[in-house]
Image (cartoon, rainbow, N blue to C red; front, side, top):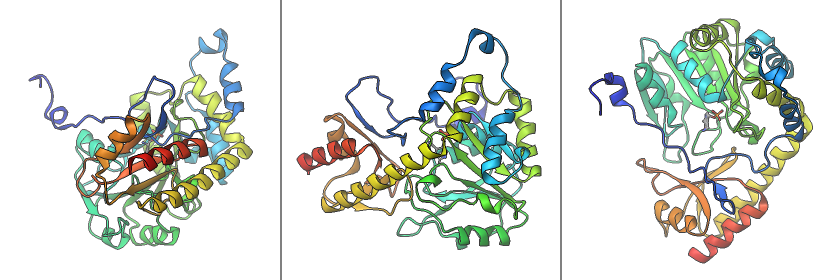
Length: 351
Ligand code: PMP
């Protein structure tokens, strides 16, 4: 620890990312990437970069990408904000919109970055425990607060919230910003994007990392009415006025427009998830109902850390957790059917 650091830096717990192996031959089911990668049209668009395009700064307004995203949602381009992954969009959101007098509410269990951002930006927060079935109960969020952020589906449980419940919360809290983090929504969740038109307090954040297979490119976005998006633009312009680099802009635009590829691959992942969930239950696992590209599961006979270690020695990576209440669980990203079969074969040996 350095005496030169501010007290905020001392209080931070650095994020430990899931293992990103360089060794091939590993079945990588630990960080919720797509096993299929992006649309070939995205690769083609990226490969068209030349010295002449890369010597120039990118479009500071990311106009074409914002327009394409807006068009598919029936919104205006200036109701879309883009950033380097939804993590950056979330960072700007915490800085610009959630820094209020009352505490920011979010679930306990949820995406681990939320408390980190709160500590980093000095935001008071209150975590609301999920219920005995690990579900988020929105009635518990009807209490005095500054703002609310909810992932839907939640992470790492994968459990989705019905849109009617989200809408009822939005209606009851007109003076609070409600952020819905939809990183995993394309795998069976109910998106709140159609509600943006009706609720000025709603901001929806999505990513191209999961259902568009572009985790390596770092592209995420927020949609909301003008006053919320304008706040994010102010924060961004004081931070880095170029939201995305040229390769990311080109690849993301092509991936976004390839609707057919997107639909086909998300359906494949949903089908593999259903198949894997059934097979894990056969092996004695308790598997939470998932609307995401991963399963959250535990086995009564094996502690999560031990099971993850035994899988690791068989070249299969899954995610385990050390936080209270979830230390028994594994989070297993949905791979190809072949990868899921390798996981099941290994579990068959271990259990
Ligand atoms: N929100 C949630 C709930 C997530 O799980 C993740 C992925 N770790 C993110 C946001 C960030 O994703 P990205 O920065 O790749 O868009």
